[in-house]
Length: 174
Ligand code: SF4
Ligand code: SF4
Image 1 (spheres, rainbow, N blue to C red):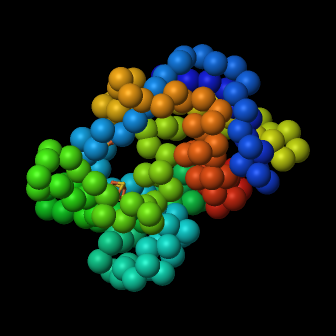
Image 2 (image 1 turned 45 degrees about the horizontal axis):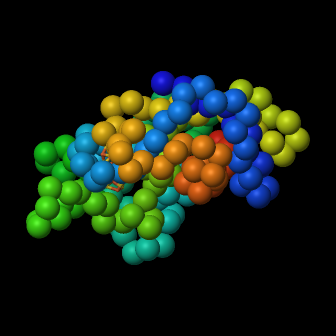
């Protein structure tokens, strides 16, 4: 599902909504559905962050074969987060007092985790401005929950622009 067309400024993360396609709200309800399917692909940046935090890459990283290292057609990914025997991401934890799940490396989580359940498509670039089409992975259970935050330019700036900018830099997508 496409949500809207946004302009992001690479220098200052300024995001503006150029055209609204669907009005959507989102708030994570910690159902764990996404992370129970396994961990995401990792960029070199993600791996460094986890290593600097004290994690040994031998314990969290499954290297990818050369042919699987691309992201949106560009070389970007180095590996995939390991999974537990039941298939869920090794960093997923469940609160024993509730049905809720949480990420044990939340502050250091990989870029693709930060973007979930959103995806985007590059439409064009103008100087420092990137024009993107923001998309939604509609299997997420936090979409359009009652207390969700509207997915607008402020939302994009607060939660997504920084990660999208990082991917642009890592992958030279622009
Ligand atoms: S599927 Fe959506 S609501 Fe559930 S944990 Fe993942 S991001 Fe949160
Ligand atoms: S790193 Fe955290 S957010 Fe990402 S899949 Fe694992 S548990 Fe989920």
